[in-house]
Each structure stands twice: as C-alpha cells, then as structure tokens.
Length: 68
Image (cartoon, rainbow, N blue to C red; front, side, top):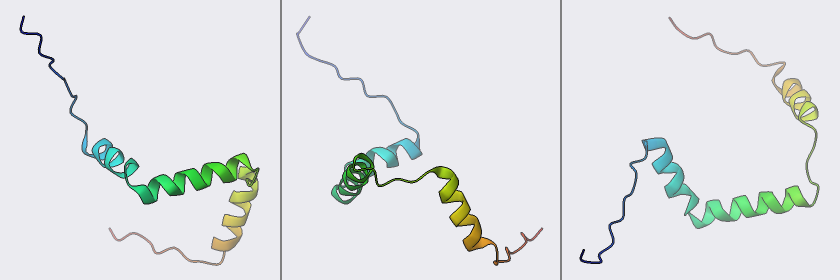
C-alpha cells in the first residue's frame, strides 16, 4: 500500500447542496445565531397564538383561484 488517503464524498441532491452552500453564508449563520439567542432568551410564543394572529391577518383576503 502506498499510504495515500482516498476521500469518498457522497453526491448530494440539489436541495441538499443548496443547504450546504447556504449554511456557509455568513449572513445566514448570523441570522441563525440571532434566532437561537432569542429562543434562549425566551422570546417565543405558543404556536396557537402564532396561527391565530396569522389567521386574523388573512381573514379579509381573497385568495385567487388557481387556473385550470
């Protein structure tokens, strides 16, 4: 044996490649860190409250029907 090292890298699907690329983006890393700090500080709300607020904002909107 020659003592060389062979690195095997699995091929990733396109969406996972994009995820890998984005996770190295400094802006995205900063946004993740900020969100995590807010989570640790307790700046969260129950999901029911979030959905209720979202529903009240969209109640008056009319969604366009998809064309067939």
